[in-house]
Amino acid sequence: MPRQKPDVILIGPLKPLIVKGLEAACTLHKAAEAKDLDAFYAEHADVGAIAICATTELISDKFMARFPRLQIISSFGVGYDHIDAKSAGARGIIVTNTPEVLTEEVADTALGLLLCTVRELPQSDRFVRAGKWAQQGFPLTRATLRNRTVGMVGMGAIGKAIARRLDAFGVPVVYHARNKRPEVPYRHYPNLLDMARDVDTLMVIVPGGAATANLINAHVLDALGPNGILINMARGSVVDEPALIKALQQKRIMAAGLDVYAKEPHVPAELMAMENVVLFPHVGSASVYTRDKMDQLVVDNIVAWAAGKPPLTPVAETPWTSWRKA
Ligand code: 8YV
Image (cartoon, rainbow, N blue to C red; front, side, top):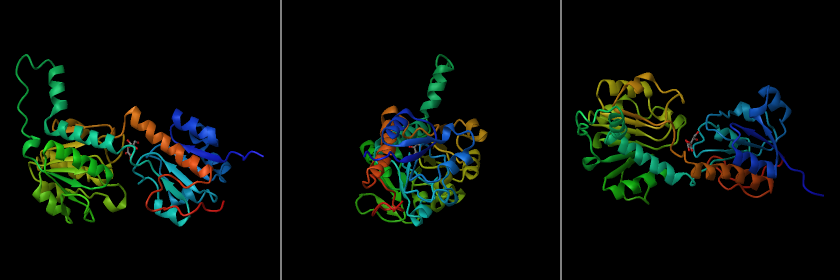
């Protein structure tokens, strides 16, 4: 007798690759089509798997408690600060994310944002479009990468890919991370303030969540100083946004390049008003090529579970040993 397809809940946008991939292996229940979400979750309380297609969907312990047979949450994105992974671990639920497939793309974008901010490239594009070039040349940029040192806040897989690119650019790199990474040749600063004092550029690429909330605060920005440039490729929660706005307005730092914000998609009007700030709409991994790979990994983790095989990319808090009995 053919094995019955397992029931799976899909939360978030209905991306064709994910819907098609999951529908081939499972009976899919789409939260996006539910009229009454509460009733929808109650009706499907016995699912063994949930797929999540957006990093904006908060998955709390209370939410997981609604699904007593839940075995896997397959989440889109490398960051999973939207999921209470520790509680998932305690409940025997495996959480998976989509690492590696986006590493090089996010590192490319990080370098793009850094160059845009340091050399004011979006501003120069606006200058041409405004027809100003015929009157005068674009002003020389105050900043250059040629005399800068980048202090990486975080040295995980994406941090390393960014540092490799900076090596090729001839830009000195140092880093702050909780633990020294013996595999990288860069100087390690156990103390973030010490590093911020010694460099003029910070590249933030650490996971979000409670451990890193407001890590980049007014003290760090002041240590960075009036020549300082801050690039945030991590999560909005890592930077104290009001403190950053103040530091920029009071010229206590020179400029900022941001891909992420505290309350996306809200971007504070104060940031929009400043010419020395480059604003990206959270596009670190946002190419069709890379997003397809991320979507496929969301599917593949569920497909592995449905076949009784180990998940491909469990997160550190929920290492796989065996599938919990349903
Ligand atoms: C995505 C990300 O752009 O993977 C992550 O953690 O932040 C990015 O790859 C984001 O998930 C979009 O919602």
